[in-house]
Amino acid sequence: MIKTIIFDFGGVFIDLNKEATFIELERLGLSALTKQMVDHNERYEKGMIETNEFISFYKDHFSMATDQLLIDAWNSIILDIPEHRLKFIEDLKAKGRFQLILLSNTNELHMQKVIENIGLTRYKKFKNSFHSFYLSHEIKMRKPDPEIFRYILESHDIKPNECLFIDDTPSHTKSASSLGIHTWNLDADKEDITSLFEVKKSLFN
Image (tube, rainbow, N blue to C red; front, side):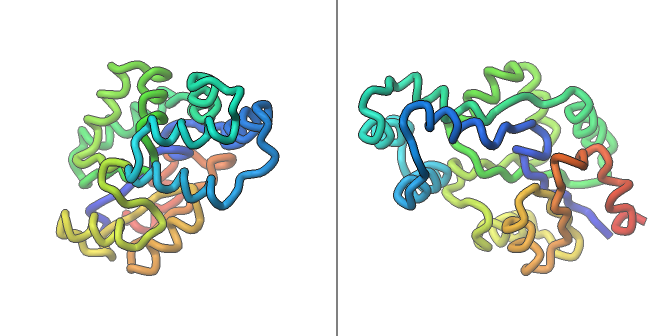
């Protein structure tokens, strides 16, 4: 029996334009993401560097770009949370049937943009719909590292076979599954989180 549901954020609740950031950086002169850039981005998601250091790194690569141009490019991936998804998670919390946890790879700039896009009131409603709310840059871990899933399981005394993890990134669900957690690799182009109990009905019967 599923007692706990762990949800990803981007691509599950909030819509993303995943190509936008690279497109905007191309306009600033980027031809390809280097390994150094990928590593730098992951360090930022883990909260290992501050926002000013994150931006400073990219200014060294785009000398003509202002801080705001770089921030706007970085944040262009973030869109909105459709109202039907917000209502879905609010209603699920109100029913009290499951422990609800959010687990997101994200960073300070993206979360600022989320609040700007959806408004502080809606953001508070969303956050309050979870019993626990974990952001990678705050807990210094990120998916798909197994340690982040072990941390959640141990912190909440969750049995893996009583837990469902939902994410739109295959490497994340594969990592969770290796620990015995039930998973749903949601295809954001074809599926919606509001169909959870139809798609995974075998887990809830």
